[in-house]
Every structure is written in structure tokens, then in C-alpha cells.
Image (tube, rainbow, N blue to C red; front, side, top):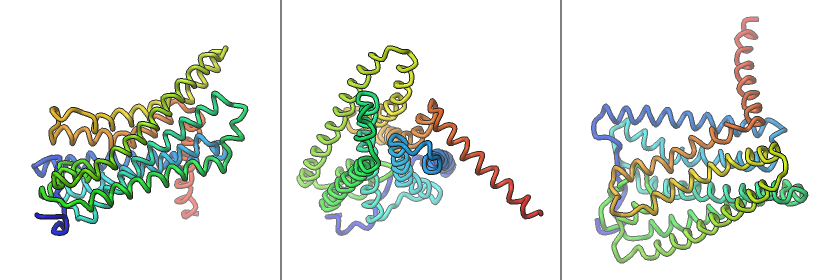
Length: 319
């Protein structure tokens, strides 16, 4: 294949070669996908329906759950379909859409985690100004800025990546289309333009990471000055779920893009890709609800209301 104009599809890396293992992969991913849909949908419903959760922290959590739903829906369903139908193909336009959506949602998640760090900083370090700095309009603007910046970043990378001539075939060494694997298919002397765009994105990511670290340095300094243990415990309870999600997101993503090329292999890349594309959206609802009594109560109300309402329907029909 001389260039990208002759490509009409890509071949993704399968998880297994035998039909039995492919079917096992399908059922495993189906269980993970349904659990992720359920967990994030419950959080979205709880935050939207419970007026006690209409605060900046839970507003940003709702946005994070939306991003998690989108990111796992971008990669996992196509992989499940390929395993079920014993195929590896994805169309050229489908691959481009997958790259765009994944970069958009992944960037949006990191941008939103940065905004959430700022929210925690204001709540703990400047509590008297919290109502003014984190009003409804300010929260909507910050969330919109996170989504818009990620959209423009994804548009830039997708346009740059798929405008490059592809001279190394159409086999993508990953279970979904991602930029590093597409770049391996481009001509050796033609991908510098995309590498430059990647460097710019890495600088932005590093800037967000430094902002989060500095925010938590000041947060922990302020928390340690709180005289009562109860106050310290409450402050830590507010911050630890967010810090755990940030650590999970950064560690898995950094390992993917910063691991030495000497230990790189298709099977290892496949496992690591699952860690940073599938695991965080699945675990985030569990992390946020594990020690959050307000969210647990709201989730309990949503679940009880759902089952109570559904149990009343047959009785009403019987009457």
C-alpha cells in the first residue's frame, strides 16, 4: 500500500487466536462493560436526581462519569464485536472516529481531573471564598473549557495523524486504533509533524500534572494544620478518592507512553492498553462511592426507588 488513499480498512490485534478464547474474551469484556455502564449510570442518575448532591464536586463527578462512559464505549464494543464475529477489521473512517473520540475523552478526563483538583484546593485552602469562586456559572465555564480544549486537541491530532501517508501496511498492533500504533504505519520521514503535535500535548499534560501536584501539596499542608482529627479526617475523605483516580489514570497512561521500547511487545502492549483504557472507567465509580456516605445514600435511594417502582407495576396491572 503506497499511501493512505488506498486504505479502506485496518486490521486490529486480536486477544486470542482460537474461537473458544475469543468467546471468553467477548464474555469477559461484556461483563466489564455492563458493570461500567451500571456504575457510571447510577452515579449520573444519583447526582442528577438528589438535590443534596447539586454541588460543584458532584457536578464535576457527573461530567467525569459521562467521560468514562464515552471512553469505554469507544473501544470495548468494537473489540467485543470482532471477537464474536471472528474478524479483525475496522473501517478507515471507523478507525479515525475511534482515534478522535478516544483522544477527546481521554484528554477531557485529565482536564476535568485538573479542575476537580482546583475545586478541592478552594474548598480546603480558601473555604471563605468557595461560594464566590465555585459558583454555578464558574463551574459550568470550567467544565465547558475542559470539554472544548479536549475537542480541539483531538481534532488536531486526528487530522494530523490521518493526513500522513501510510506506507507500512494496515495492521494495527492494538485492540483499538490509537495514535502511536497508526504512526508506526506512516512513512519514516513523514510523521515529524504529528510528533511535534504530540510534544505540545505532552507539555499541556505535564502542566496539568504539575498543577495537580502543587494543589495537593497546599491541600495537605492546610489539612495538617487543622487542629481536630475529625476535621482532618473529613478533609482527607474529600480528597483521597480524587487523588486515587488521578493516580490510577496517570500511572497507567504514563506506563503506556513512557515504558522503554526494549520491553515493548504486542502482548504486553495489549495488556497495558486494557489497564489504561478499560480499568479506570470501571473502577472510578467504585473509588468515589467507597467512602462517600452522601453518594452511598443517594445511590441507595436510586436503587430502592428503581426496584420499588418496578415492583409496583405488576401489582397495579393485577388490580
